[in-house]
Image 1 (cartoon, rainbow, N blue to C red):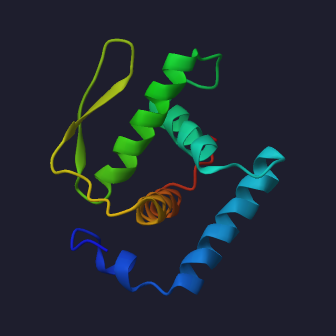
Image 2: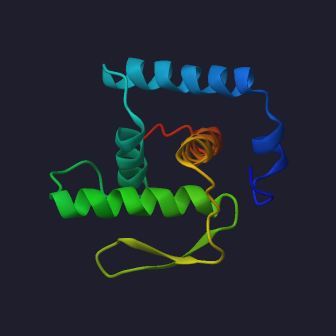
Length: 127
């Protein structure tokens, strides 16, 4: 893995990481009635960050919400920062440094780690 990962990301035992992920998945399944995949979690985080409640979104808006979620998640490790919120309430992030990915498995693990950290910071009672 890259040197850009935090010590917690690189040193956490795989079993501990998987246990934390499974706990989050069970909590989400209990809350929403079905087990979400990573894309569904990104959409939920995007909606949470938009903070305008749940409404009907177009396909393009859903993609934008997932992008907002990804930027918000990677802001936890200093890759992005919130630049501004536009007149419609949509957050805009700026890239501070590229997100390192070596392969698809590491990319997914890094994203999952950030999701776990996000919910640890904000349990998402509004979700």
